[in-house]
Length: 111
Image (cartoon, rainbow, N blue to C red; front, side, top):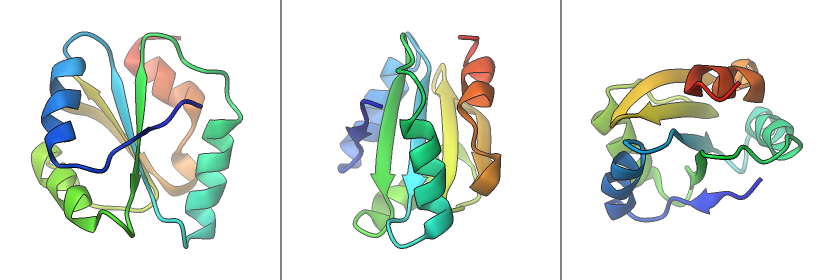
């Protein structure tokens, strides 16, 4: 998986723009949570998705960005959590053991 680190609030506007051309996923990850690590490992083992960007948000280092993401896309904060952004809006979100690459790609219209 070629993760793009989400480390700056300005990237939110950038990924919204990108989402108008191709789907964007944001994985909200807690490095101290075993469930989050398991979900990330499952995503890491999957083949690289073409025509889609995957952002990784470290919740412990960038809680302020996580709060901004939740506010921007009107989603309840969870960890771990995956958000699918298309045309500037969150069209799909899942958390914990429900995070699955097949479902993400299907919702993105890639599979």
